[in-house]
Image (cartoon, rainbow, N blue to C red; front, side, top):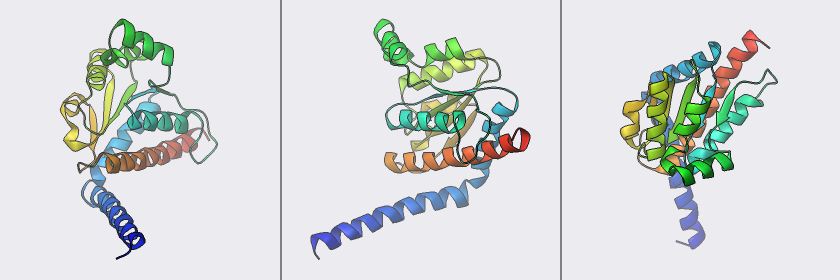
Amino acid sequence: MTKAATNDRSTVVALLARARAFEVVASEHGGELASFIEALTAVLRRGGKFLLAGNGGSAAECQHFAAELVVRYRSNRRALPAIALTTDTSTLTACGNDFSFADVFSRQIEALGAKGDGVILLSTSGQSPNLLRAAESAGRLGLEVFGLLGKGGGPLAQLCSHLFVVPGDDAAVTQEVQLAVIHLACDAIEAWAMECHG
């Protein structure tokens, strides 16, 4: 077998593994995903905003989600309130330096969170200390905590009001499914926004 043929086969195998992950979510977890998305939509319906946090690739997905809500997803409609807590370098570095990196999200939640808001935490493992502290702070403030997690959810799962755990242990595939969940949530949220406000 040539090197090109081997690479082609590896690519196909990888794509099929990803397709299988999506198939499992659709066939075995569709109901819980729909409930998770409905709970997200309810935050905006009652006038709340989203505060989003994650690390690394999950931070990028938080920023992506917030941008889709604030700007637009598919349709032109009113702006929707969402803040990615991963973007303010002055706040992140000040908190990391003066307190600890474990506090970079919880401190912002304490400053920005208000009754009715939802905190969305993205993680492929559910193990990150800064996300655990974020969930704890949100809980103390009475905010709903949404966990979009992988690898069984880890200890973070126990701190979430609403939870969707992507099945499987491959972090890259988890992130790809999480992005699809984000887009499905945007579809539902935008449909509500267009129906109510145009």
